[in-house]
Image (cartoon, rainbow, N blue to C red; front, side, top):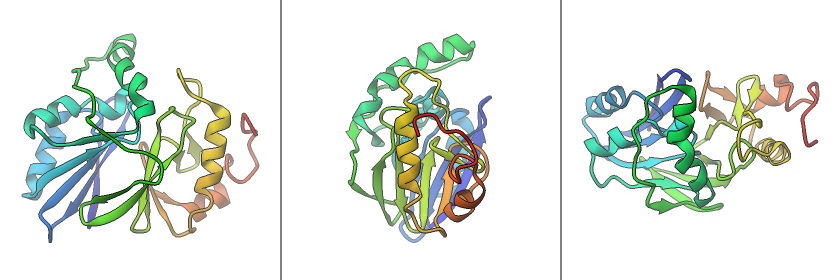
Amino acid sequence: MRVTSITVGPFRENCWILHEPALDEVVLVDPGDEADRIVAAVAATGARLTDVVLTHAHLDHVGALAGVRRAWPGVPVHMHPAEAPVFDFAPRAAALYGLPFERSAPPEREIVEGQVLRLAGESFEVWHLPGHAPGHVAFIGAGMAFGGDVLFAGSVGRTDLPLSDPSALDRSLRRLLTLPGETVVHPGHGPSTTMAEEARSNPFLNGSALVPGR
């Protein structure tokens, strides 16, 4: 499976593209903005888009969803049910930032803790990792974690947003630390990293920073 990303929008969000040439399949993780670029990148693979999966529904992770659905009508979109209020608030959040936003129909497929999804030929387990957002999930499999905005290279997700929870984020980070050190973390912003590197150097994981809720 080939994994690439497109960094989009004013928040520099990573939209991840999972492509399995042998199956002629592509999956999108968090189409956040600049739908035309994302659609062109998928089209360039020559494969068919089979699924869109959302780690969470903040405006910078769902802003291209309407455009993607227009290009591929009927493509299933997967989201944790606890993210529904965040998804519904996204257009208003965009307005508060003075940003354009095209509203999309809600995701029609619910994903829950422990569910296993087959994405571009690989199996990924859904981990519910709230804190940054109530229905935030990560997709864990094939030696990788598509972790959205829970963990970044050298930092962690914000907890000063509506429906965020610092204590829940701390528990989610501790859970991520149970992953093998060689697990490659593909985050929602910034460069990819590994769990070993974050356990060693990330101040929010190695005890050198004061973590709310701990």
